[in-house]
Amino acid sequence: MELFQWGTNPWGQETLIRVSWDLLYLFFWAGIAFIVFHVVYAAVWLPKLARANGGQEESAGVDVPESIERHTLWARIFHWVMAAAMLVLLVTGFFPIIGIQFPWVTIHWIAGIVLTISILYHIVHATFYLDFWSIWILPDDMDEAVQRVKRQMGQEAGEIKKHGKYPLDHKLYHTAVMLAGLAVIGTGLVMMFRIENVLVPRNAYLLSEPTWGLMYTLHGLGAVLFVMLTLTHIYFAIRPDKFWLTKSMMFGSVDRRHYLDHHDPERWVVSKESKG
Ligand code: HEM
Image (cartoon, rainbow, N blue to C red):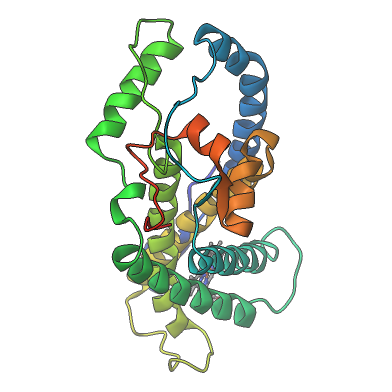
């Protein structure tokens, strides 16, 4: 298996061109393998774990409403615009590579600009209007991760607190998407100078050949990572036990039972004034 594609410049030197598309298949199958592993793990291991812990206890006496806002309308609009742009980018970027040819470049860069604008909007919205720290990995999460590993290995782990608005796995996922997103957006915007488009004049000499190679390589790395991230994201979104979260991304709210089953009211404080 190759990791990179190399070419030869006019002086006979080897230069980096892009990632090898072997990585596309690698990340696709890694995503499928993760899903198969998780289906088995969730069917065999999770029920045992739930029995060992005596199920989730109710947080009695907590004064919360029947329906709790999880995602504001604007947060949901952002999510679905970004999801649509991402799917268009994956299809237009990779279908030609797997042999389905069509004029993809214009649709691709337009979807790229839509993704870029939606991410810029999200950064401003999350920084000033949402609970900014709720999605970042904080020291508390690391303690919880150690406890969970101990518990998986059958050791005494003490009481594991319920999580705030986002559990550690969601935070890890968000961090991976952010890094891969920065890679494809940062490089994609520069790569606009390599193609004919209405926003910037074409200028293949903007960067040296090796630097272009680096741009295409980073773009390709972020892109293949998104194949795995998107597959696993859609898998979790359609799992019956996670569907209450997917519904909240459509309609905005979660019900009291799911809130109390999964969240610590002290870590995700909800009130009439609380931010979604
Ligand atoms: C998940 C997101 C994305 C995926 C999966 C993706 C995928 C790809 C792939 C596979 C290629 C071909 C690369 C090559 O030939 O080495 C490509 C090229 C390109 N992408 Fe993306 N991309 C994404 C995001 C973006 C964004 C955000 C932009 C713009 C802001 C963008 C703009 C471009 C441009 C201009 C090219 C160059 C086309 C060419 O040189 O022929 N892409 N993309």
